[in-house]
Length: 107
Image 1: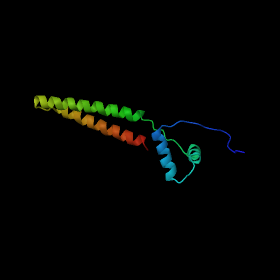
Image 2: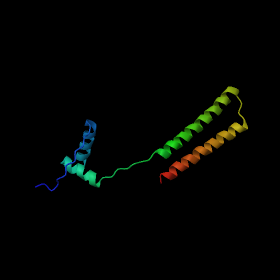
Image 3: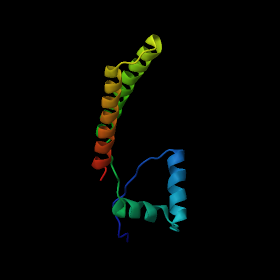
Image 4: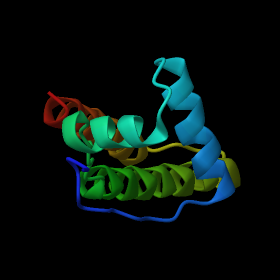
């Protein structure tokens, strides 16, 4: 008599099956059922929420657009103004602030 009476069935594509088999063989488990049971019970899934990172990326992209506009102005006029330099410095400081924020959220 079977000690395990509950059947679980799921489908995978060819690539997923190859990856499963490669991992199973690499750790020396001969039975696919044993491997999948072990992974399902003892394995874990890491979910990473990229929402904050996407927002930081959007903000950095906007800063880059602003810097490009200033560079375009400089190339068109051949002159740079103190206000342009100050704006670039502020944008760079904002980039560093965002970078520190991203890094601190990963800790």
